[in-house]
Length: 506
Ligand code: FAD
Ligand code: NAI
Image (tube, rainbow, N blue to C red):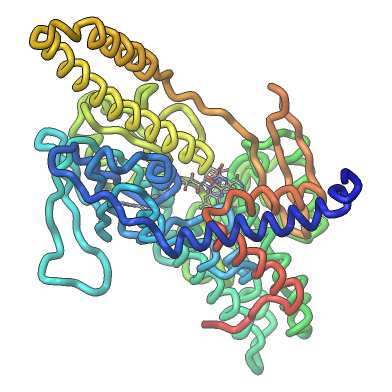
């Protein structure tokens, strides 16, 4: 019987897997009726539908509060695979999950407003919101009152006030950015291939410059080089030898947050891929066709260089969003905070009551990553679930204590119940402060290679290469939001491997 089972084990696990996925899909398509909002419960307003907020919503018992979600983006975006959308390795909708689907799967109904928060008044406990979408109704601006508020609005792109950046460069943060880059790459290629184009103009148009050697810039540069090597070169061979990618970084090396060995591995891989890395080079000005930067020479002298470009992608990190800046200005305890809302170890915004912050807009002493944001969101969900349970238990204890004198015959039983509730209460109230557990950092560097700094038995394990690339793919696939996302991403990977990336310019 054991032999029979061993033989059929792989088949059984495949069938089991299919049944499991199928049931998950069926459940998503046929959700249970939801518990409707109860006006006697507290109103919890959540700003944003990114990593922090969605992780909170995924783990929150929504029937304990009247939950209202406000975000200009009615979907969750799986940012780790966003660089792959710029070249069509992955189609953008494969890494988007509609917020309506996420909220419909919750037990308690949640309200969603597609709007942007413009200001928060902590005195009156209201959020001012406006509709910034293309279709406008009669009401475009209003106020939403809250009892509890979670701010998870992320960050915007840092430009450091450098002239020309906003006007002439592409960012890489949102789906629209990736779509614009994809379109512009092909526009540059087709314009370079235009009849009688001069050699200088071909060189300019096919020069793709990336500013910022953090993970965003490095991953994008790698994806871009892959696109040219694997697709453009084959389809338009006559211009392919003119294509160049330059990565500009102000610091002495790229990927400053990775270990030294991986920095060296990335830089040598880029050399092989013919990506030109210019370190110790600070961009000072951007025009519609050139980027100007100061290079620090080994003798410490600065030299100004001017590089003509066709596409310029700006990836120099995060800046604070206006709504967050405005709130910081209203709270005296935030006056020394520069990079976002300073929070305590329970993620409460310093100097406020009933306001919490998660993710890139919060300063909790960790890097602004998806990993941190989702753990913070998860922590808040546990905290709020506990707070709701605490209130119910306290209410029960109050009621039982009141009935103690009225029913002296049942005093022993009532006292036992009270003790039991008090024990539960002590256990729940003993919630530890937020603690971030770092699982490691991963980055794709092109040519089917990736680098990984993984936490391993309290130590660190650094690895790079093709096997790490397989690890990178499986890790990100498992982290995708839903089964739907996972299937779509697998399909995109297969499609671009089999047929090449789609080079049509939308
Ligand atoms: P976000 O995910 O940015 O979400 C913010 C939300 O707030 C959005 O829904 C937005 O629409 C909404 N919002 C904005 N303004 C307002 C407003 N005024 N009112 C209401 N809502 C508002 N991290 C990793 O750990 N691993 C990776 O591999 C990785 N790859 C990345 C790749 C790229 C290209 C980028 C750009 C980032 C990457 N990151 C990665 C970083 C990670 O995406 C961020 O740290 C993470 O998104 C932060 O989560 P968040 O919830 O704070 O903000
Ligand atoms: P970043 O802040 O990590 O890197 C920006 C880089 O731009 C810095 O190295 C900085 O020195 C450089 N820079 C700034 N101004 C410059 C100028 N004028 N000229 C030249 N260089 C300049 O930003 P990034 O890459 O957008 O990442 C943001 C956050 O998201 C980080 O916390 C990062 O860890 C995370 N992230 C993680 C990824 C991963 O784990 N695979 C992928 C992408 C982002």
